[in-house]
Image (cartoon, rainbow, N blue to C red; front, side, top):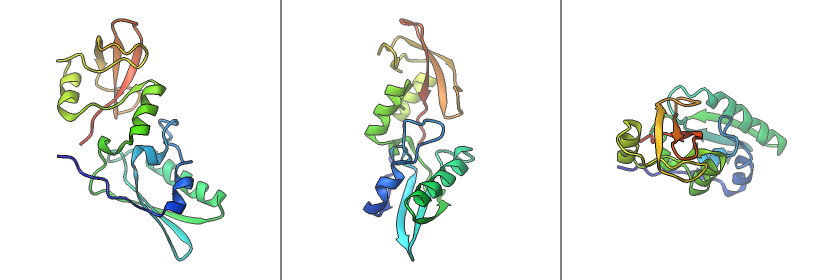
Amino acid sequence: MTIELEQHIDPKLISILEKVSDPEIPVLSIMDMGVVRSAEMIDNIAQVKITPTYSGCPAMDVIGDDIIKAFDNANIKAEVSLVLSPAWTTDWITPKGRKALEDYGIAAPLEEDADKEALLGNKRIVKCTNCGSSNTKLVSQFGSTACKALFKCEDCLEPFDYFKCLK
């Protein structure tokens, strides 16, 4: 079951939010990651609600500070709060964000069933971000961060991260 992202974002605030990068994956904006739940002007203050990519994500404090700085640079006061339910899902990564992940060298998340097969080492379905081969092997279920797994391409021999599916 896919949970749809319910976003309530004032169109005037989108350009500011698109300038805020994910601190762990700087080629993605927080909009590309789908962590912005809402953003609206209330009493001349930008009220921004964000959802962590997983409970206890250490990047959320940095993201909150970066949002406040981005609005401050636009001479707008901002307040940021966390929304924990519904939980974030990799379905909320935009198509632009998925492409940016791949271009950056991180394989985008597969669908839930395929993800399980890949992470159990049952199927070679995670494509190498360097050469595009599916002849890849799981090295570790944990990559550079807890939300990624480490794979190695058996053709070009390059290691790369795979962003795990979260539903």
